[in-house]
Length: 513
Ligand SMILES: CC(=O)SCCNC(=O)CCNC(=O)[C@H](O)C(C)(C)COP(=O)(O)OP(=O)(O)OC[C@H]1O[C@@H](n2cnc3c(N)ncnc32)[C@H](O)[C@@H]1OP(=O)(O)O
Ligand SMILES: CC(C)C(=O)C(=O)O
Image (cartoon, rainbow, N blue to C red; front, side, top):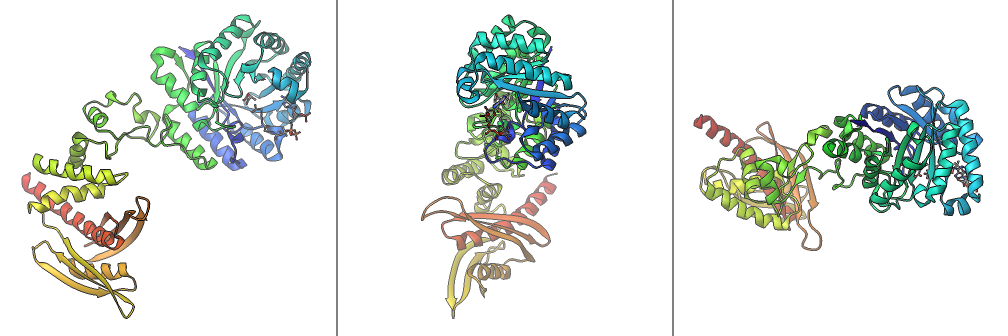
């Protein structure tokens, strides 16, 4: 099995994302987690770029013991010497130095001829080697460089002492086949390349960073660079967690080991997201919120029969993550019935089918069906057949008397009687809650109450969520309606009913045992 070294540049190229600025404490926290995650090398920053970066790189180099710590430097004496001051305390001092090799970068950015660039590269590697045992040299914009120029310059920097040669796709321009071919070409033509590490560094401008990285591995790369969550300059870098999981899941194909502790994936991703403020897109591979969420009926049915039908990654491979069968408008009977059973309902096929029809209607109107919605749908069937006895809102009238909101509510109570009560409050909702409190048989304490819009426009649905205790037990109720006062009253009753049904389900189960 080949070993592929993982070089993490979250703290250098990742921090180059627009809008990210990590302080020293945050950088150290991420570095410690990267060490736990098992990366071989941590690029902690660019020491010559600012006193803050210098301080962070130095602290990380002095602290981290299980990963090599490096920093980036231009081919400039002062960058290299400043980097030495920051990195010399590391377990194995390592420098990453670079210069651009593409015609456009050499002519316009560096204003140097190719011959001058070779000379500068060689001098900088020689200088770096006076200090650092490990020197990585990168040909910036390699994928838009002349291949034979790359061979010439790499021959020279290897002679000068470089221990790693990195071939970056700086602007995310290459296709996987081209990038793989470049690795093959350089492996076959650069003198002494077998003695150094060969590294891939890919950007995601055309969405191919991970594919290119894997193509490099197939063609001789022994090190891959990238960032957690794929953050980085412009569209970002290759997402290291995706590369690591791809190597693991498709080990039959790549036959390569990353040394990454996959169980730390989710934690590492969340820490980086939290400290950088970059939200992870829900559909992102491996660490996105939806990466293990299944919404459609056919998939959910398959998942219930055998999870391998639709999941190639077992969620707990990457940490504390679980499969989710989200009930929505595309869900089918299998998932719906299975959730009903999980919630403790033992209903006849007829009732389950009726609840399912009502669920489909609701799902057409709502983005996500919450557990409380399911509860209402499922208990409705039992209420209709008189199996469970609950409170039922029959009428709600809110009016103002001398500017004081007053509500009159009619409720059918579990004994079957109709009860009417009236109460005032300092607001309409309070009046409703005061009235309901008089009607229900037990002690109610409201812990939390919120209303939010669950659709858009003039006819938007307002969703009321109430958290209360009923006879000392906590319960949450929820209801959505165009009329938020009605939604609030129903949410209140829903919370009370949830408690009653829990008690009744438990009682029925005890009798059945
Ligand atoms: C592909 C990459 O990701 S490369 C890394 C990019 N990262 C960063 O740039 C982040 C840190 N950078 C910085 O803080 C600043 O750019 C600094 C401190 C490095 C330099 O700042 P300044 O001295 O003000 O220069 P500025 O950034 O405006 O211009 C870059 C200079 O470096 C030169 N340069 C660029 N790459 C290299 C290189 N590899 N070797 C030598 N010189 C280089 C440019 O030609 C330009 O030189 P010039 O001033 O003679 O025209
Ligand atoms: C410095 C190099 C490796 C780089 O970040 C790039 O080319 O994208």
